[in-house]
Image (cartoon, rainbow, N blue to C red):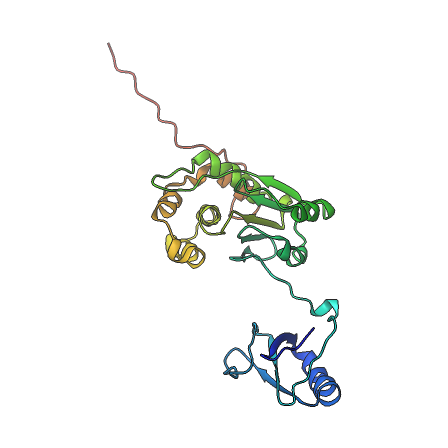
Length: 262
C-alpha cells in the first residue's frame, strides 16, 4: 500500500481507526496528517475519499512536508471488494442483479455464496469467470433475452423461462445479469416485481434507478403487458405470494359457448 504525493484514501471499519491513529500516525509516519471524515463532511482539497458507508469511516492520509512514503502490501482483510456496476439486491440474501461481472468483481461475488448465475446475453465469459464458477460449483444458466429496440422483442415465453429460474428457491442465492444491468435485467426484475403484486409506480421507479437516462419506454411497455399467470403458480409454491401453488397456471377462464337450436 503506497502513499503518493497526491494523497491516498483507505476505507476502514470504525474499530480500525484507533490503530491508524496510534500506529500509523504516531510511530510509522509522524509527518503524515490524518483526517477522519464521513460522507456528510467536507473532503480536504489535498486528499480524496474513495467511499464510506453508514457504518464505516474513511481515513484520508494527506502527506505534509517533508513528504513520506509507506510501501508494502496490505493484509487480505483490507483488500478492496469491487461489485459489478449496477449491482443491487432484488431480495436481500436471495436474488441479486448487476451488469456483466468481470474478473475484478469476482472476489466480491464470492462473498455472496451464489448457487446460480443467470446470464441474459451471449457475451463470452472470461476464463477467470469460468474458473470462478467451476471452483465454487455455481450453476451457470444462460437464457438469451433480446433487447426491446424499435419494437418489443422479449416474448412471454422468454420471460416465463427466465422467471422459472428466478422463482425457484433451490437456485438461491442467485445473480441476474446482462451487459449493463439496465434493460434486460430491468425487464426481468420488473416482471418479477409484477408477479409479486407490486405497484407499477414502484416497479418503474426501480427500473429508472438502474437504467437512468438510458431507460426505454418499450421495456416499461413489456412489463405492463407481461402476463404473470404463467409463473404465478410457481411464485405461490415457493412462498413469494400467498397461495399453496396448487392452482393451475391457466391463461384465462374457459368460456363455454351455448348451442343454439337449429
